[in-house]
Image (cartoon, rainbow, N blue to C red; front, side, top):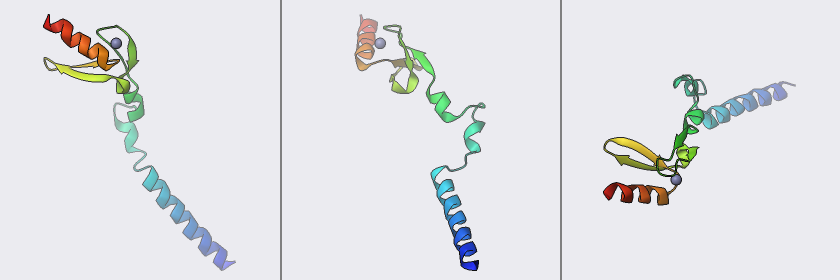
Length: 86
Ligand SMILES: [Zn+2]
């Protein structure tokens, strides 16, 4: 019976160790503007060239005049740059 209790305690701490290793500081995640980081990644942005909305993390990033612009694809980004240069 004692052996079972020891095994249980070892198992419990192993489980906790694995959990904290897989999910480090779960409380810290919620401190960014009251939202989790995954919610912030899912923010929708508008492609200024084709005017389509898409998730920001799937977008193609471009920095022009200090502004961060996101495009739905590299094609839109290239066309936008070309239209600016005309
Ligand atoms: Zn586009």
